[in-house]
Image (cartoon, rainbow, N blue to C red; front, side):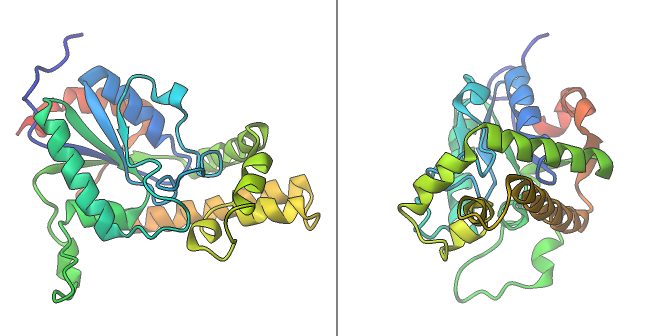
Length: 252
């Protein structure tokens, strides 16, 4: 299968979907087929040292595909949607300059919207509903269509995998340096694991709470993205072929 030639890309591919829907794996596969580079749009994965608890792709999973948007700040540092927009736009320009396809992938709706709707974060400009009415023509957005039963099962399996991957050790290490009152700590699963470490929860109870927390997050993400009528929803197993068959949409 012949890869598209360099300098042929006019748009950035954006892949969205709820947590645990398989966005990262699909994005990596597409990047391999099309010569792409990935920009993570995940407000959890920006933090250094938070790897297992944020389901950050490992170096082995990333392979030889360049990844951006990971490990940008420490948990006690501030990073906003405005910061992400500026960072992502810079990386997109660099990737296009190399003749490669930029692939933005993530489930943080505000990060994605800030980019594709070109939000203006200037203090003197007040954001309005109209900011979300017209997607920038520079982006083509697809969503991973997932059966809810399957999604719950994927969330369950990922929670089990986190414990197999030493989430307890990671939590202890973070707790030795950072306070759980930090937004970065509170918005991740580490407080639940810490409760287990302190003997307030059993392992099984912790896993159940993590699953419920991620399920609620997934529902919020789906609600957010469903408001965007420009997203084309495709089953995960079909997304690679769908993108490949519609390359003209990324070149136009």
